Length: 481
Image (spheres, rainbow, N blue to C red):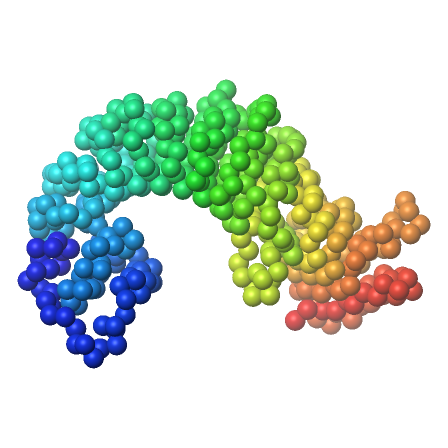
């Protein structure tokens, strides 16, 4: 069933609902909230809401409901999706008033025949096209760009995914003058930096920006991005992937770009690009951070610390997970700890050089690490022995001086017990080391410690417990469930 007003006339109930019905007394504003909740709860949103247009069910109830639905087409995300799957009554659909969503995802198939005709027919209604989501190879994009060399005044979302790096033509969307654009979401993958520079400088209304860049030696994408980000004052989500075959150090930006509304930042790529970006950005309102960087050389991570320290969110705990492919550090708020929620701050590194990676990671969060009250360290069972060769436990734990609760999973607890008493430099070192510690929960490593030896394992901590007890700083040590 298609969503044209002409079709509704013959299929909807044209009578008002009974005056005795409770729902009939709800204001239009309340009905709209209910409809929007129904929209957000749609299972497989794109498939159900966009492709199968289940919102038509609401418009079929009565005239009043239909009026509320069509009066809020933007809020309820109403529209007609045109793609490689042929919808019914395509000509009737395109003659209606609803927004058009272009959705073509080609990789192995060809853009020919009726699929090409539908795309061309839909793009002719450039004053109704609200979204373009296109993925394909070079010949696919040649056909798309041929049909999009004029202005699209209501375009809000643009997603272009190329199978290999290519150019974005100057005439795309009626360029080179793109000052009319009111884009909210932009996602570009595998388009050259030079060709997207003018485009990025024009889209100052963005709230969501996602870029995947494969840069050549000698280019500085992070410096270029900082220039573009200066005008994006409404940006709320920034997702970047920057890779290079031969990365190198770059100069520190002179100015810092404030992104006061940014709440989500995601990064994948080389660490030197990340650090230069962090040197030129300030985003204190961040709530969702997911960073994975690759350390290919012994480069200092000098600026990421300042960028993260400016985040206003307060973190209560840190969880460090070691696996053979790398390790991940997660910061958790108190509510995330209490409710056992998935952390919204994650920082990870690969294992091109484990000692360098660990040192670089710990130097990236100095202030944040000193204020957390709970530390959990987890090893995959198969990888615990591997990491024992690289971790100096005392140096590692010194990064968390404010910790009150230490929890371990899969670690060699005998090594930890020896570490807690090891200090050859200061006579009172045992008291200075983790001075706030109150509780240690030991997870077991079955490959190292059979269940019958759990008693001796706990006994290994007795000297440390005794020293703290005598100093009036008791520490409770126990085996976790």
